[in-house]
Image (cartoon, rainbow, N blue to C red):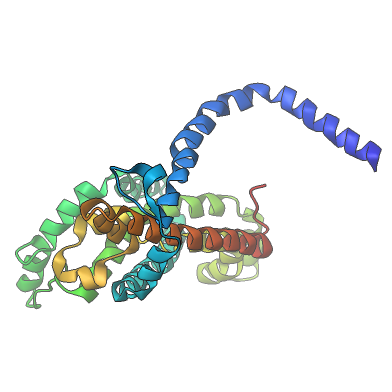
Length: 308
């Protein structure tokens, strides 16, 4: 056993020497990660303090779990967590199904030029900022916007998309899917490209239609990719999309549209309650960490997916 351990150690040292240049290329990214992600984590101590900017972290009074008790006693927090879960879960479900269906449909297109053109068009919104899209959608979905104008022209009643809580959530989900499903489609198309063509030939010989081939060949072949995407997305169950909500929310729909991230922004930066906002953010981060660990475990168990 000792000889085996020594052999493994020598093998690891040899691999480090062989890949030394690759590790050197990785060094700048590691340094940036430490400087901008890990060192600032020391600031979470203010969640347990009555932090005052003029006193600093060292001079502020320690209050223990007082801010966490205040958080769980605040009725708004319950509503905000509910909003976050409803919006995030809706996005996750629709964001899992929409790319899969579109990838299956696009995979049936036999004209290569058309297929690539459509794939490029649906992928382009992924690169647009929510600052830009928020302004465009606010204008298009307003009372006098192009969408309501078209609905009135068809004899349909106008819809206050950004002024009704239910419609606002629906708008968030649909606009997020429109922006991001092109990226998910690429992942599924890559998985579809790896399906063995002999399986389709065998199914066709057996008399299977294209629909049956989809259900009995295509879907079983890419189901592991779908499981990985679905399980890993669970780690974002408390991330409902700060950029999108921040650029589209208004006071009328705040009761149904306020999420944890926008609440932390308003309480922490606008109202100056840094300690309370940090406590809320820390609570969210701890829950997200647990969910991420759980989802990686599920991905490994059901799809044999692992990073290390």
